[in-house]
Image (cartoon, rainbow, N blue to C red):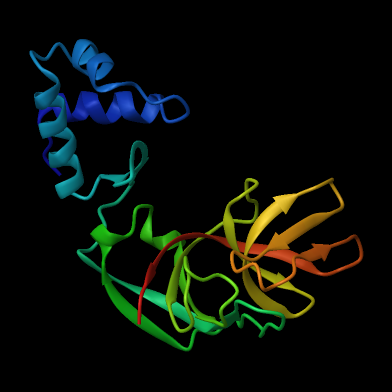
Amino acid sequence: MNLHRTQERLLDLLSKNLDSPLSMRDLQEELGLSSPSLVYHHINQLESKGLLKRNPSNPSDYQILSTPEEPITFLNLYGPAKCGPDGTILSGNPITRIPLPSSLISFSVDQAFLVQAEGDSMVPEIRNKDLVIAKKQQSAENGEIVVCSLDGGVRIKKFRRVTNEVCILESINQNHDPIVVKEGMTFNIEGIFKGLIRR
């Protein structure tokens, strides 16, 4: 793919500073451009060429893509994930694949999957039958909403680590008690909540 020399340099700068992203002003100075608006222009060009993906709610959160993404991606939809006391098994076999514009996913589409929420423990954030967009990830920060498996069931809950051996899965709806996950229980984080499609 042919890139403007400035875009090549910008991509290189962004790649080298993934852990501590540079400000628009810093990028402008490094590239020798006359204004931040020119930096925005070249960033938008990299996005349109499918080489860069930014989180719309946090411009400093971006990913460099080794290969351009297709405009439409097909995300795997797995079985229902309970937003309540019981769960269902998150099978390795998707129920179906749902087409979505790749631009709606704020991270690399090959890390994305869908689960259908069931129950009311995560309202008003997540409602019954919503399709939850999750990013494949096996760890979480305190307060993040996770798609997780617990003793064979799949749940969507807010994660909080207490100790190395103990964590708590919390509901947003206060009518549901938190679940204490202790040593000896089979628990895995499958992904991090990144968005939803309301049905």
